[in-house]
Length: 264
Image 1 (cartoon, rainbow, N blue to C red):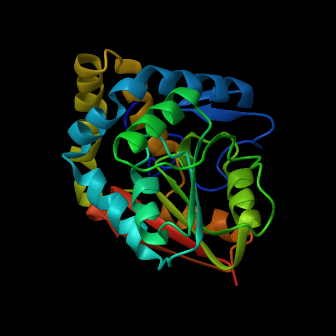
Image 2 (image 1 turned 90 degrees about the vertical axis):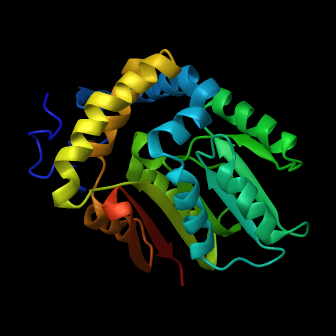
Image 3 (image 1 turned 90 degrees about the horizontal axis):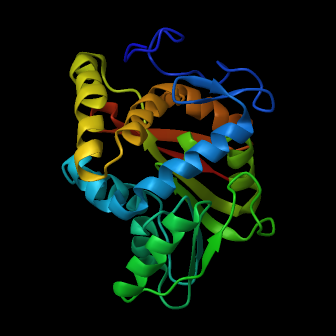
């Protein structure tokens, strides 16, 4: 299939482009059952966990660090507040949030994938940051309602099988006055699309093959970005999940976007 997936005019799925999540979903460009997507996404991250940080630096030229810092700084946080970081991977956001809430606050570092969570826990400990780590599914969070002041998910929502459930769960565990921050790849500005497609489908898989010995996982990465809702589509999904106000900020010409949903 070509880089611009013919199932959508823009190469991105709209919020309601697929069949009901309980019946079929997508793994990259493939049409699969929800259980199969969950299994295959787990396999992707089992495979790449050991090279995850190196690959992020190589793929983005280090820009992912600036994107994450922007996302963390976008919503004010204060000492003593509570943060839930979903799909926290190797702990980049959790570490930055921990500095903001201080010793009296709490940051819970989570991931559905054990290999990624373990890599993040070890990396945080090496940096002198000890946080509670919970392996959990973003679609069914094991936390009471109105527990957190902020919930974040960075480069993880597109891998969630039922995004609408995860967004509703994020809304549920937020306190009034809280916010959800979603940092994710999005729809790039049209003039850059041809170069971006070439890089995504020709260069990234080769880097994955050489560095991580896994070309297929990085081909999935490129496809999953095209199947993820674009900026407006994600706004609509977050509003449908119950957020009272949603806005977004494009970074690097829309290569990524940060969506913020607020609870009043």
